[in-house]
Length: 139
Image (cartoon, rainbow, N blue to C red; front, side):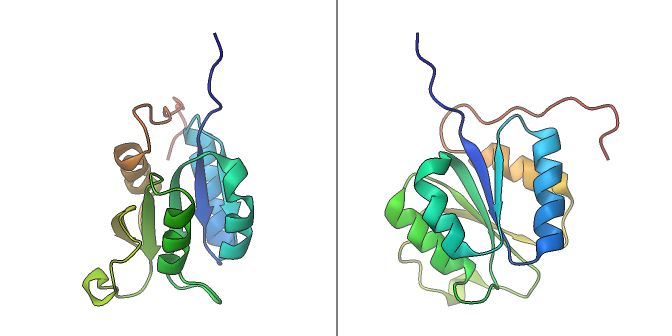
């Protein structure tokens, strides 16, 4: 019996320290691989090989914002859900919804990694979200 490759968590945020931190926390606590990118163009270039179960992206980034990235992901893989994170005041109603059917929720920074983990589990593509690793030293 052949098993399908494991789906991954894709993180895109131009703040390196934040991307490194959240990427490490998710890698430490989820059984799914985590792919972190600082530039949306790099994430889109690699996207076909990532088998994304979910995309988590910041809104404010140079060159391409998070909504544009989500639209691009939707055009490649309409079933891949996305979570938008932002540290700024953000009203989704002020933005056209075209190509955003895969946007599941907006999460305001700062947030606890467990909030993001719960959203990843809730909105994961498919019926088998990644498991959480048990770790007695979990913060």
